[in-house]
Image (cartoon, rainbow, N blue to C red):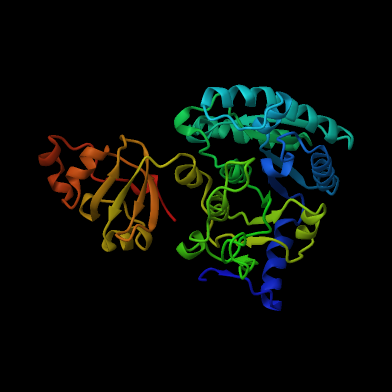
Length: 393
């Protein structure tokens, strides 16, 4: 499979060990994400033994001089347990209400377990709106960095109680949220702890010949194709959201590891360089902070299909996207929205903030800049997306 390997030869082990060694040298900022399946029993009640072990592992990281940040799921599951219910709510209002019940219980439990190791924690609730709004994005960054400077461990969760229906679950069971947090704080390593041992060549639940992929050097379409559906009943995420999280993190220059939540001590083994889970290698040329926000701070509202000449101009020439390179427009979006730029085969080339809405962009497709005023009655911009607001992926 292009871009990924399950080969654990000496060379592959050296690459993994080098990436991890460089990531955790000095006072490393390490984002650890845990899902609902990690934190709860099958009944939906909190798994206190696992939460205690997790607190001990992160406290050990802090004692070693690192700066851990915890991105956690579990509010809905904790609320279900407190209310004596097992079935996940189908409707948004009920889900928000149950999350409100569970969030307090979740933080109370974390505070207790971290307190046993003399560690102070702080609750930080984020929504997609916090990432999409540039000012709020920067405010979140400043808050998190200040907490780390105070030697406080941030405990971060998606704010389910105020999420809108359109954005419900957009962070992908907090996988994408964790990757966004890694970019926010300039993390040295992102670790997703889940109920699977890593990325496999096929779904191990249905294919006994599936092999664990040790190292992913590049997230190619073939790697993305390994993503399956949702995971356990307790969570909303699946391998697809973990691949997207890896793409965000590695584009930002942050390696990402996908490991199982058990046995206890696996996180330490990963940081010691052992070949556990799947490690995603960061891109050699990482995105700057503003480019990270442009590319991943919002949910794309639509997509613009471009020809191969435009692909070359964007990737090799660093050019703006002009109307002449556009072949078609998909979805409905407004001026200023984030859109995906894809080639004729649907492969994502770039993302950017568009200068025209979907209707006007469709009218301009394939035309020269000099024709814009005649087609629309006025000309606001020469470009569909200006290069300053466009990020190649």
